[in-house]
Length: 330
Image (cartoon, rainbow, N blue to C red; front, side, top):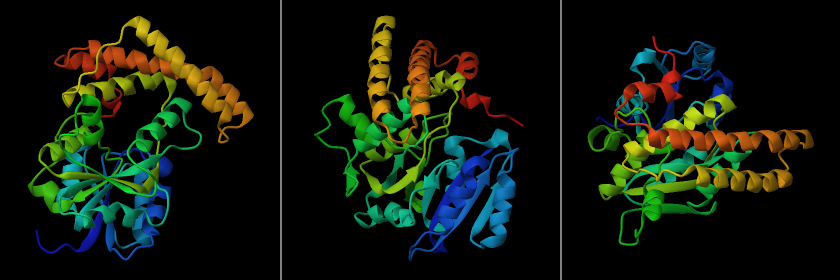
């Protein structure tokens, strides 16, 4: 590659992303940084106002590019690889179309870990759930990212003798490209995203760790993000997540029905205590979540069991139960 035109390319794949896209673009374009950057958006057949929002911002900002692909050409890994090849920045900083940078130094914090070592080839930023999101999801997100390190530091992950069990290994290789960054040349010429239906980010994290590179967690490179899912879709979402784990070689043990009932009860009761103390919910909303949140726990474990009982080679069943497969195809 010739000398990069920018320090960073902020890359966002979009599909019907109108709800948060204007906030994301505003947050991206008002970063207080000495780094030069462009915004690259690759849209895969949006039918809402996504393209209108992009075109309006392209008239205001000269460093925004739009590339359109057919919906049938989209793939989580495949499209991110395309964006890496199209990027004119030294680093590619990925955002999903519903992840909003939390402050105006977000980009600096996402790029800072690369200065620590040339072995750092993946940076994962923190995710803070939306205040009003599903309680179960809110508390899970906070627990997951809280385990990666303090908000005042940067954590480096690598393969070593300290990995003595699957739990530690899963934490070391964990990666989310909802809010992430990697060197453009590395993505293009050494380790790319795998072209898989789901969990492409988990596989990237695993691949870089296994190859002897470093992965960083940038807690200050924070975005506001949580999936806005309906109860009817949650089982399918969990089906996709567990099937994605199975693709990476991680196969959770199938919980018995009795164990599932205990986990649903335990999780629901624990969340009720948290909801009662959660100042982000109004009294009316707390009463609503007391009744509805347990249903999400039920759907979660229905999806987990369904994924564990489904033959990975049965593409018909996988498509039937997958939320990802509901993406409209051209």
